[in-house]
View 1 (tube, rainbow, N blue to C red):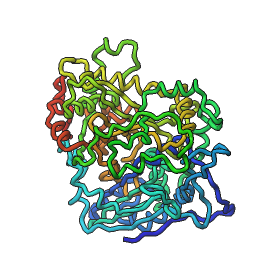
View 2: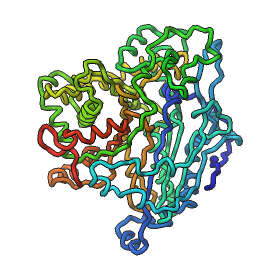
View 3: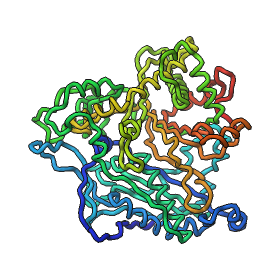
View 4: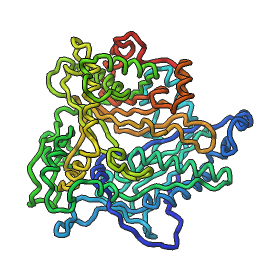
Amino acid sequence: METTRIVPTPIFDNTTHTVPLSITDNWTLRWSVTSAVWYYNSVDPQSESLIAEELDSHNVVGTAALATDALVKSLRCTIDSYRLWAGQLHWMPYDPSRGQRHARLAVTYGSSSDPGVELIRASCPSSLATLLPDAQERLSQQTWDASFFPSDRLLLPTSLALIGTDQHEGLPCVSVQLTTFACGAVGIGIRAVHPIADATTLVQFVKDWSSNHRAMLADTHPHPIAPVFDPALLDHAAAGDIAALDPDPNLIGVSRSLPMHRYDCWSSAEGCPAPMLPLTQIPADLRGTDIGPRGEPLPWSEWDLSAPVAHRHLYFTPSAIKCMWDEATSYTGVLSGQPPISRLDALLAFLWRLLVRARGMEKDRTNVHLGILLGLRSRLSPPLPDGFLGSPVTVARVSLTGEEIASPSHPSTLATVAQAIRCTTAQFTPETVPALLHDMAHVVDPNRFWVAFYGRRHAVVNSWLNLGAYDVDFGSGAPPRYVDVIMPSVDGCIHIMEAGVPWHGSDEDSERSRREERRWYDEPVCVSLHLAEDVMDRLLEDPGLIEGNLGCRLVGRV
């Protein structure tokens, strides 16, 4: 293993910049690190010439395309456009007399003392194929036990600024790892603190890097890349005066009417697991000050952190997604006068119903909750520009009783649940999100409130659909064998993205694909589930996972 730091190429105007991060960035520091690894097969030398004939001139096949020295060279070029990523993440000084609130973040960059982007070069003595089935094999299994893939061992430990520590000085906020396997395969991993990069930003960076890399391999000028690091653009979208001493009560009313959790971590010491107890303490700077009323404590009794967690991938074909959507939209009485249900609404409703049944709560008359991570880029007017960096995200909360979600006596449950999901997310509009931003800007400390939780009555879903993670090509002309999105291994964590396998489907599907831009549900979808082991066992045995009420196969074979 070799670890170095990459810093941007010096520029004529070598000015140090300190940029406060955005309102939403500040709320995501305690979220898990944004992380994914793109694994690429080596190319069989005997087939290189045959493959090369089928590729355009910008593709270089084989070991040359994925050589680590070449990848490092193109990474350095790309970091020149992402200079802030090499900077120092730190707290802004707390100074209420100047309106500087507690626990707000900034990045300082452009200095010779910048920590840089961490680069780890590692090797694995195994071949990738012995560790990871290819995409076709994973889909043919219908449910793949992802715990067999040693993600945690392949990604080497690193220390990022303010993650699991109060330390930031000299620590990077982004780490890149290049892993070579015995067979010549390569893993390209990125880890970034969440305030610096959400999933959209992370995938955008990898696409920009791969574009630069292909251009270098072909000895052509790289396409211009234009990431937008301007957190103030989001802050300017907030309603009212976010610098005022007190928030606007009318805007607070609009914000608090949105369906969201606001668990008060500072009111949650009772029953808190020992490792997390420090998070429940009021910071020393704020003790004795007016921190406002106490809120709802975190329901620690519902989350057994010691229980073993299983990790499985479920694969759904386009026809399976259509079956769910057809069922969810078939009950016109439920849908009358409501926003139209999307395919994703139907998929989430189907998964939530399975989960509630697996948890044995289909007769429960108290609420269970589904958190849905929402991007805010397009929920503002005007929308944030393409290439906007950071974490403009929040988590919406859908709440229904277990009985409403999964009761066998109500045939319209999928429609009811899908409609509840649609009506929840539809409330986050260009009219309401600015009020939410006003509320978020005025909180005493953004780390105080949790907008999501896990455990028996909770689940949180994160979608990477439509980001194009499997479209990233570093010049080999082949898609990744696997994109490993690293999610926390906790009970109730759900992640959804394309499965990365070409789908030919029916003649009708193929004809539509020629006429229209392909949509995520025109190809197989991968649902990554982290659930308590006993819950996972029951979910996988649920007849509804294989055969739907309409008699169509819900988990399809390739």
